[in-house]
Image 1 (cartoon, chains in turn blue, red):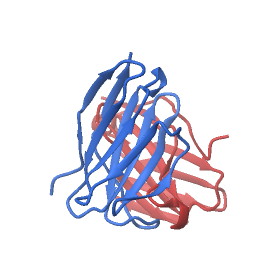
Image 2 (spheres, chains in turn purple, cyan; image 1 turned 180 degrees about the horizontal axis):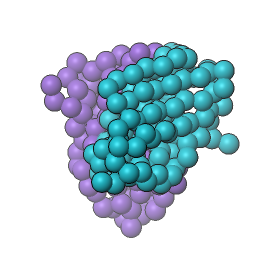
Image 3 (tube, rainbow over the protein chains, first blue to last red; image 1 turned 30 degrees about the horizontal axis):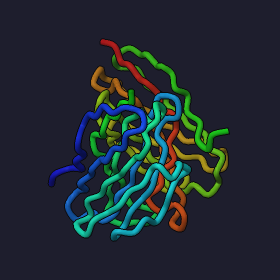
Image 4 (spheres, each protein chain N blue to C red; image 1 turned 120 degrees about the horizontal axis):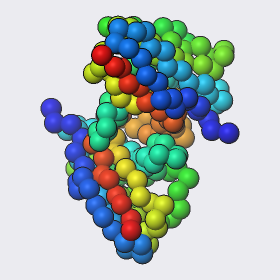
Length: 115
Length: 114
């Protein structure tokens, strides 16, 4: 079974631009979570989608948004990029959208650099 | 104060050593505890998953959870150079507002030298 895939793997943008990142979950997985990873803050939860609905959201500004399609693929968008948005953006999929024994499997991430 | 604290290291040990990695947390609602391994330029890979307090063993890896002390550990026996990576502890509540959300420690950078 193929793992979580993320595209693109690397991206360079300039301040003020917007960016869209894509995530394809493991086949059969319906929940997709997004995380931002930086050296200073570590891995921080952005939001989670299940059945095309955002069910949970972390403490990030409204410039960060996402969506999920009927095939469970997900995109996240960052508008008006700032230098501090430079990070590794990770997507994780799981079968259920719940707590407990639901295991998250991570993709390789998209490395975003904002100049 | 962060909800989950993890010593970032770096930690350098000789091959064959026993490695101990630890995290403390403040949120008593955390019920599920995980350890992920992340190699450079890769996404985190799940190593161990533990529910509530207790021990779990898988090959050379042992995870321990002490909820009364809000402390979790990962032990690696007979460490190998291939174990060199960043180790991340992660935790979650049970259901409700925890949907899809893992709370991570900062990660400990481990190097095992031959």
